[in-house]
Image 1 (cartoon, helix red, strand yellow):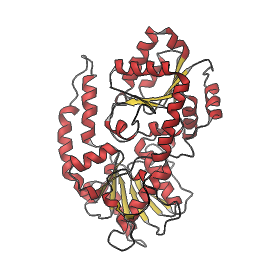
Image 2 (spheres, one colour):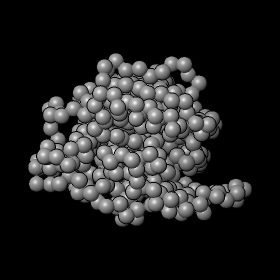
Image 3 (tube, one colour):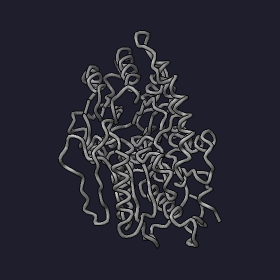
Image 4 (cartoon, helix red, strand yellow):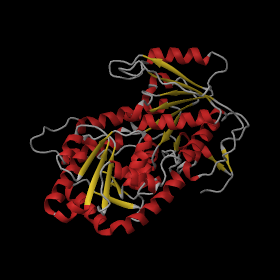
Length: 436
């Protein structure tokens, strides 16, 4: 018999029943933004995937979020048990804590009170969260992790750039977090590494830290050869190309795109065979989209893609590369590619090598330097499609084991049931089944 509140590993390894829950919950979610269109970040996509699934499981969901900036169209739900509560954002784009708390308290007094409160990061600030005992916060990045990112970006800084202040200020941010994090009753880490930090560095008691890895919709992100072929045809990628590399996400500096751009630029200049036999497809938007276009016809910049198109994009590539310099959270693009049956290549950051690319049999990792990135790109090119395909199959099996939305939703549901009934005899905090 396992006490789930003290379970030290990711709950994704556990097997929970897919049967309808024996108890339905009234859940409050605080999230800075609700996704609209293809521009959503990982945190918002996580919130939408999780809470729509929980509503479909029968739970009553109340989403406290900001009204969309520059849009008169508000999100709607066809589900009768999913409700939105909008407030005008602060000048910085955050939830107005006074207004949203007033909304929350009014709803909490309507009918039955909330069984559980969930906040994505600091959407509900600690000044309010300290008053809620049945609360869980999901951390998609914490300051201690970011120190690694700051060091990397300082090392990559050109002599012409001034030194960033972030590196010197980050330690103070960590101290601030260590002080206010205990105001949240329960903490959900989205990577094994973050869970270790919360317990060991932030000194939060183990029974209040729970690791639930991010998951994506396995019905959307799955192998589909015909969709991949059609996508390549539609975007003018000839069948003669022996290696199709894919990039996706926000095309900004801290996602590693200056590093990737320079690596590709050098490879294309020094190796005409690679240039002729390979093509790079870039999905997403941001300032580095224009720079990628400078590399010529061997780089196809697609812009932001809707989810269905993104699924086809993964099926069109042979290898997915994420050159991120942000040592935070668990990037959705990596696990989307893995579930699509593709090998992955990513920066050797603790959250990535600790939870996602745990071995070379499923992909490649590299230190965040141009030379190291060039080396693994060349390695994947020499390995060829057969080796890449085999690595993709291993990656998919790991994705199905740990990173599906079904796995993630089941874990969150059980945690919410456990927290909501921790002081009674419903036994939701006890676990008897075998570990996956």
